[in-house]
Length: 460
Image (cartoon, rainbow, N blue to C red):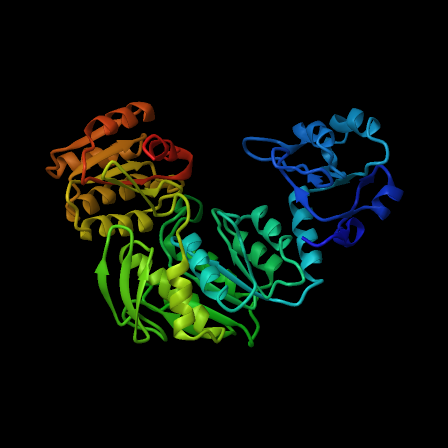
């Protein structure tokens, strides 16, 4: 972030309280923080209330660590009265909603620069595809991309505030678990081009149907003018829904059809897949067929921006993967596939297909925890996971959580002989450590709140 006056960042934001207007007028910032654990001296601290933590409880800590100012919800003014009185010369600014204010600040900041903005969303593969696009475009341009899963109403503004005068392209991931979120985030970014990876029942508990999810994802195209570009998975069942009403030009990708698709999948390894693209053989650190689709999407974006096939190949092959989203670890001749960060029916099915296709010296072991936010469809989708397990020849299944017990029970009903269910993650971890042997491949996948990363950390 380049240094900019705080008054300029807050332009258009209703300021309900300012403790020191003179300090506000003279204050410029080069970084903002919503977490005192990473706050640096001079940062503007934005107190945001959340489900687990309320930033207003840490305002004192922020001041102690050297914050240059505090943005807070005006409803909490009385709670902060003592801290305001004890901090003369540092502006405390009260607004109706610090989340919305952060978004407005990011919009004001981005207006200072001339750059191309590319947004992407989808039900699965967003973060991996974002990383691949970043790697491809970085072969030719200076690119800023959202880190980790900075894809909500806090993470998107933080990414926007990361650009500077040297940035040529922004690649911004967008996520949603409630109607209206994609429209809001797209309004912040105002993308020049946008991509949807696929449509599936992720967070269906909040949307009611997959069709409603498709409509929500389509909102990423609403901000595109006739000179923009929409990148769409041609083979997705909801491709027609996504295309409907789009004013921008449309470019498509797929595995067998579209404006760009791979010549063929040549070889699938444990931690790589080789495929043909534009007459070249690409060896990518992506998992199975769904990984090839993500790489093809990134290649299409690269082609759109004028990269040669050799530059695209180099960018895809330089991608090293994302933590919790398919990174491979090997310990004592056991391979761990870490997909612990998230899970939904679409991504679980793809991961089990990958595990089923893999050639292994030992057993194929699936460690699975609850898929959350599926609403009334949850039991049905957890039963479907059992069908995928049986169809893909998985040797051993470990399940953890209330809903995953449905998967375990259905696996046993289907004749699977080695299924173990746990209500205690530490007991699962201990039993897994006792059973795994050289040559085994262990795929670990569950929703973020199930904390399956602790299983990975126990072995790598």
